[in-house]
Each structure stands twice: as structure tokens, then as C-alpha cells.
Image (tube, rainbow, N blue to C red; front, side, top):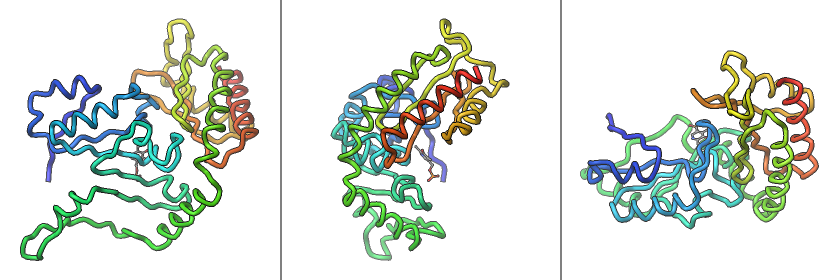
Length: 261
Ligand SMILES: *Cc1c(COP(=O)(O)O)cnc(C)c1O
């Protein structure tokens, strides 16, 4: 089945679409877009979008694959704007990244729309070979236990604040032109010319070189490069990282940037 799809870059652009009444659902990565460059949505936008979806009777579907399970400082990113989506997709952090498992959470009303007698043919025909794989589920349960037993969420604000300070130091390095942070996610933009923010030519693979250099200093991370934008270095540490390790990681990045740029 083919679903026509519009791509919009702001809430204003969404509201301006001429065929709102035919839109079934809206997908969004809440608070921050991941591989599209670690780009932050304006604060309050998600909440406004929720209100808009209610008004228009459009389902709000959140992709919390990256942001779920503490990554942004709360269990789910949508909680920061007191938003409850109609459908929420999650994966990575569900098992602490230890083994593959994904889950889709939905509201009762949507679940019930697929309930009925066999003859009604309302069944939601969907399944993966490994749906509810026992090892994945065991890892997820163990991960959720750790959240409780080790008070993972309670320890995050202090560590996120520490990261914020450490990033401010990194910002003083001249090739670093912008840093975006959302909880335990950071995107560090590197430019060839700090004044004009002109990016390095993509052929130089500057992001990859920086990450490779950082490995020598004990940090394993990855770069992103979006068509016309800067090279962005991603910093997305495990939630169990200590403040000392955050410092070590930032030091590694600083050294790598100086060495490569
Ligand atoms: C990693 C990622 C995905 C892909 O998830 P899969 O479980 O590999 O399909 C989707 N959305 C976001 C935001 C991601 O970070």
C-alpha cells in the first residue's frame, strides 16, 4: 500500500497545507532530529503540535527510537513538553542498546480499532520474524530493572549539566562553530572558516578524521554530514557514564579537533 506523504519543516508550514482534512497522521522525532544533523526543534513546538493534532483530529506519531529511555533526561522526550502521543515508536535504549528490540506503544482507542470478530476483518496484519524475541525481551526487562534499581533517571540532571559545562569549553576551540545539546545528545559542528561558518569540502571527510583521531584518546564516536551543512560530531554517551569520563571524552574530542583541523 502506498501512502502519499508531505514533508514539512515547521509547524507553520504544516498548518499551511491545503489538504489538512485528508491527513491521517504526523510523524516527528520529538525535541531533536537525529541523523538529520542533531537539529533541535524550537522549545514548545511539540506541545503546540499536539494541540494542533487534537484540533484537526490527526494522529501524532512520535519516533522516540533515539530519544527514548532517558536519552534527553526524561524517560521519553515527549514528557518534557507534557505531550502524550497517539503512537510512540521506540527501540535502541529499550535494551540499553545491548541487543535488538523495538516496540510500538499506542493508545487504547487505536488498539480497539483493530479488535473485532474474525469476520469483521479488522485485524492489524503486521509482524516481524523476531517480534517479541525472548532474548530481546529479557534484555529489555533487565534494562528497565536497572532504571529502577540504580535510579538512572535521577542521576541524569547533574551529569547532563556537567556535559553542558564541558561542551562550553569545547566551544572555545575555533573550528567549533555551534554545539547543540538535548540531554545526553550533543551535536558539535565543525567549520573550515569560523567567521563565515563555511564548511570543509565534503571530500576532506573532516568529521571522520576527527572521530578516528579521538579513538586514540579513548573516545569512540561518529560524524554526520548533511548535504549542504557542516560536519557534525555526535556525542551520545551511555547513561552510566561518569562525570570523569565525560571530561575524558571532551578532552579526547578537543585533542582530535586540534590535531586534524
Ligand atoms: C536509529 C533510528 C531509527 C531506526 O530504528 P530501527 O529500529 O533500526 O528501524 C529510527 N528513528 C530514529 C530517530 C533513530 O535514531
